[in-house]
Image (cartoon, rainbow, N blue to C red; front, top):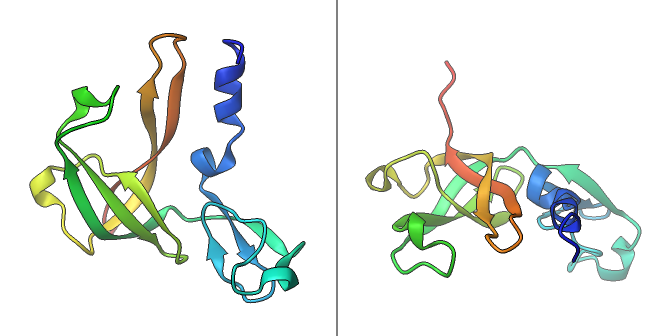
Length: 139
């Protein structure tokens, strides 16, 4: 890819930036990332999958603390990665931020936040996406 095309490529992925999933028009099940067809309804769902903006709110199902990071993430260790079940039903994997590791608990309420994921030192591209933080209790 040409240097200027890389940031454009990432900007055009709605799932990463806007948590866009889709919903089967037949059974109403919601998916993330979006699918071409529903695995339950199969052919009946073709052409009936509708985009849906997900709330970005959910609860922590399980998590792990990463101590041996992959290349380009070594400076972040230790960091928590969790499986979050969104209020709409789909589950996704994301880093948990803005809280101490000792404060992370299964079942805790989380919300998505837009953050820097990594930077490509070779071409200078900065990649952004969703991470999850504790949901603030608004009383």
